[in-house]
Image (cartoon, rainbow, N blue to C red; front, side):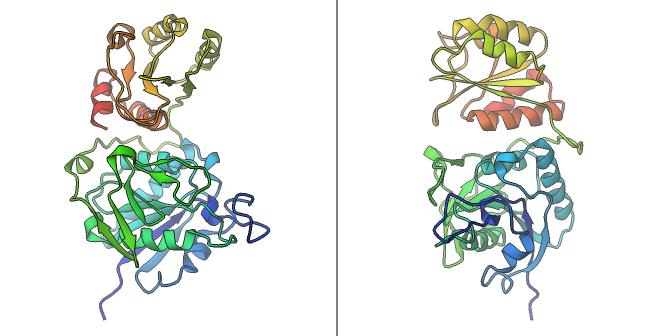
Length: 333
């Protein structure tokens, strides 16, 4: 008999590992209750398709995930991929910050083998729980030769997404994730993954940064732009002395005049500031008539939303990327 391919399933908690008091409770439940071996071991048909191993570096709701957890998750995956007989990795994760963890791994793991994140919008105790199907589908994608050289992937609700583009768009629907104008990479039906496009060389050539093996990453807050945002709010953030800052401005990442002096001084003192947009689509314009990035010293996030721009900046700072090279990094991501 042909031996089964080897697959690591790594659990981090989240709704997929959650439990509610009633089968009708799909939004009222306690996250991160079920350990990964019990969760994945109960998925029908999975053990017949792969030789499974399990790891549980984190067990919490993903709204509690921090950079220390990211380092623990990344190190667990990195060590697992040191085994050349491993076919791939599936990571179960809460959906609130799944896109951020996926993006961090996408830009800090260079291995061609598939690393696939999945989660659930309903706990396992709810009617029509989506977790078991998502785990099986993610496993089948991780075992597919067509999934290699695509970077980190996300599989939710029978859709295959790139970590580069995917985002959570609805807080409770099972169709919560999409990839906007980039589109999904493929789909899964009857446990068979089908990719709708050939492997994208840009995904294979994505910048990969080594943040080291320390327990944490540099601290980078996000400041949200809104009507009436004032300099006192920015000053309070700057007083905490972060390593970097992402400003999620309105429209084209617009920065109100009241904030520009403070930002310029903070940048002159060494703070790295990335200008992003709170909108869902579009590319930030550099040095537009409304804002001079070169004179101010700000970087622009390109097409990245604020939460992903923050992740990339944290990785760049941890990896020691020179500030002069950071804009090219955001442009290529």
